[in-house]
Image (cartoon, rainbow, N blue to C red; front, side, top):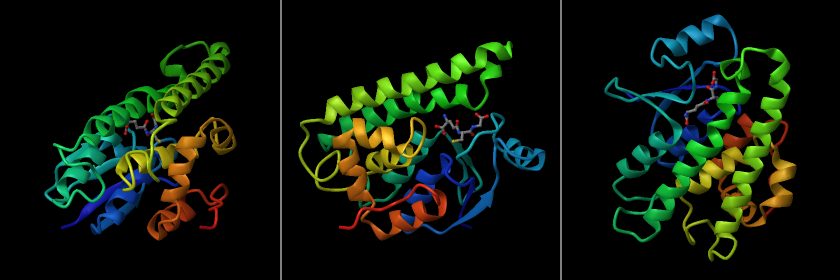
Length: 218
Ligand SMILES: N[C@@H](CCC(=O)N[C@@H](CS)C(=O)NCC(=O)O)C(=O)O
């Protein structure tokens, strides 16, 4: 048995595809768009009542949801800690802090964008809600950029790529979109560009961000 990942092009499943491939884990990709057809939604609902992706079925049949939790789980599962700082590594604090920040802060704003009616029943309010969610994302990126502005190393936690870099790289393509990210988050962008030199990252981004992925030559 291998992993089964419910995924859709460009969605939050991208970081789990990356983690599994970078760690050399076999997995099956099942197309399931949470904003798509009723059949897709039913397929997700069967194992995740929130009808969100990423949703991952582990080889033993257990289900995991929540992107940051899945990343932490997979990063620790690899006994070599190739993509995560070890529990006693000083970088572990930053790793956990910013994975949580992105998940609870930034990613949660997409729960508004993907269904503003869940937050206000009047459709007249939805444009404002979408706009505010986007503004909030910008504020959060600026906070994270400032926190890493003076950090040294090719990646965010030093000279080794971690799943934190992968999470940032995935979200750098989302609203407020890559052009905004490139202008306002130069330190984060440098780490993302370094990730994008990795052939596995390139191939996963090529199939997920077909329009937007324009890798910078090494
Ligand atoms: N907290 C979840 C959020 C997942 C999430 O919002 N995924 C989006 C796709 S990128 C989704 O499924 N949206 C559909 C919806 O919220 O109804 C996580 O971190 O994995």
